[in-house]
Length: 344
Image 1: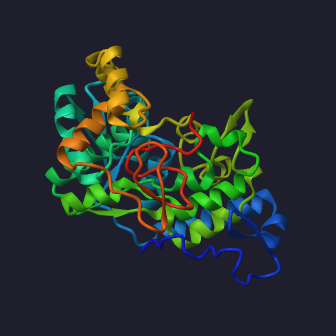
Image 2: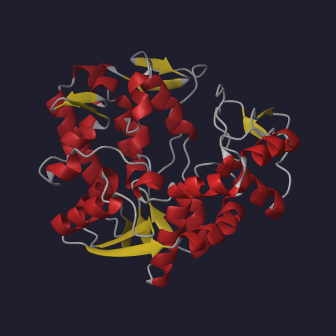
């Protein structure tokens, strides 16, 4: 089973002489710095194959993106579940292409807007959160619901790949990418596991296998974000490690956030028209919370109705700048409201 990233110890603990510390994490560098890119690619492929070996998911939460396509290719699973808001979402074209190349049977669950909005209170209650990224979680929720209706007991996800191999576009401008990824590996969590418990489904997350996690954090940042064919790609080393296994159109595609690829981000535009600017400003003042947009306020009002006030900070916690709840001191992102420290 995949293990959580607990092997990175704080600087105050005795550490080996070949380790350097980023954000309180040991990144072992001596052997990896001397390893050629080709050797790193070969070793990464072996680590991934080992992580996937023996895992037999009954289905894959499948978008046709890089990570879910890798999961399908290395696991051999032939059942994919795709969710889109209505018939929208660029994932559909990619999912069909990847499924065809891999010989997968693709189940496409289309979710009407009314059904998506009706499910939001349940998802907010399940996650105890009004994070503005909830459209992302909504796509996962409906995929798991579909898996349950199909009688599946386990599904596989690509959770952790973007966090370990620098898949997000904002990471390209980071001065200390290795340090940030080391920090992220310790605090990252994925709502797919929380949602799956509701459906009594096991979630398999091979990218979080201990050997993959450890090796990924030892790979230098310059091999994670790199130019290829005139374009800058995150997860460069991961893409190279899977060459020959996936079509180039899938292997070198751009990153699509789940809420964008599924079309669920369209809910934000719908909610934006449901609340007037005046009402939004008045409620921002009266609620004593900070909101990114009108959809964020909408999610909060559901949270307040279903759950109540946010928990107050405990002795060992700091208050969130956005909602006032307690946060672990090493975290910069609030699990409940989604606020990020330093956001203006």
